Length: 214
Image (cartoon, rainbow, N blue to C red; front, top):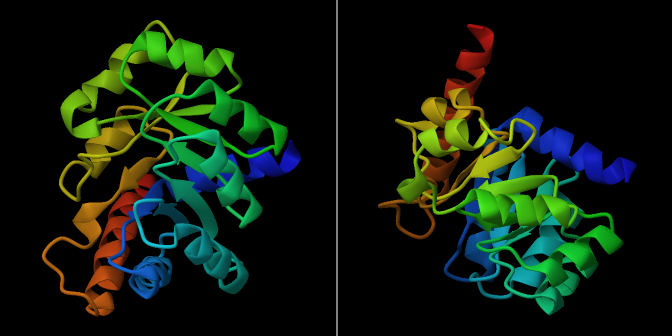
């Protein structure tokens, strides 16, 4: 359990989770490494990326200063594959009791997608520590403020709809952390990893500036 909360603490401290979807195995690895070089140390490799489990294994082995998690995990079998290949946290677009059970069995943080108070309460009751507000672009930052009224202890990470212009609004609304996905690679051709690195750095610097001004 100590490791589980160390992982959650690092995610919260870094504030940004890069949600990675590559065109192929090497592309996913290079995008992830570019984000790490840019300062985003929390990487979520989605299982919509080819050979995601192999990508996770390689990134865990080669990047000891970063946290590598698995995203778009739809069932317990995929969760177990991810964990056995080194995933340090698991993220889903939905809540699944069986995924929650297996993650708790391995003492791995599970962040399921939730879009209502009912979803969130059910997830928390199963042992989930942080829920993912998804889809964030539809829910909006006000969702977190509204949920924290009746559920002040709920830790929420939005994903989907978070961009450079609204990231501070999400954080100031009380987000545990934020997931940033396609905004890091939008309009970029395969191989332009320096641009990904620069974008990641811009996100990190913006969030750090907010912390410095508090």
